[in-house]
Length: 335
Image (cartoon, rainbow, N blue to C red; front, top):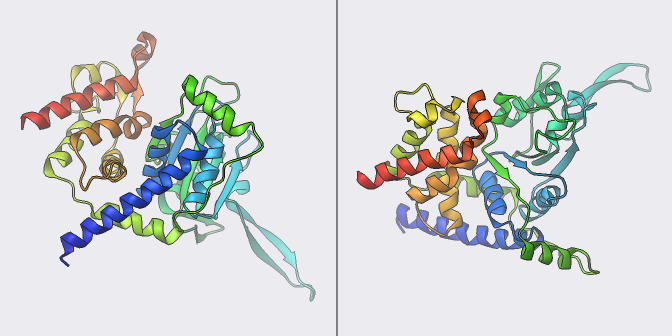
């Protein structure tokens, strides 16, 4: 069998397995298919996800379900204003042996896992939030001068309350950039909420079984990176990301007038991976321009900021990104 045939078989097998995982998660997290797809996208791409929504929307349950379905060792941290960096990373303690000798012993914090749930991450102080920066980028932490590797794979799924709520701190821009996607968790539709009521208030509670293992997920991440991406899609990604930078020569007027700063090269990398994952979830062998449009807002929104005047006018970053993505799509079609 040729290399191309092997790759097609691997992609098709992975797509079927992702479909099984998606169906299993959707049985617990009812009616939020887009949220489930974006969360799976983050994991298959080897990245982190930021889930934003009001309390009681099921974000914590989603992460718990993912931990089981994807076969990952998970830990949970409840972020509070008094949480300290050592509560996340761990610390060294001085122990006295029976012979009277003393030595430091490192006690691992909850960050030493494969899937870390950072619950209500924006309720902790900026100092504590920044404790995750090295972990999210380098998959290791440095404590007392020693580099300590984290779990393999390592993913952070953080939940965030809307910034308008009391007791929240905005995440630093450097940390936001380390999240592959931002996932907005909306209110459910009426029929969906009815299904949730019936499924969660009776005597029988749904359960899930592992579909992936840690090794399966690592293999899936390798297959994803082998998926071919056409030159037209690569150029579309570059055009879109660069168009969202207000100081770029190619930026349209509606970006220059409304955006104070735009996405960096990490956004291009994230979008390239995300469109491949979207194609996989849809059962296709390569990404399309529609995949770029669909993934643009989740990948770019948290990497951009509206100007003060744009916020005062009530402009929306999602609407601006969609408009830029539509322009990029037309350019691909005309080429």
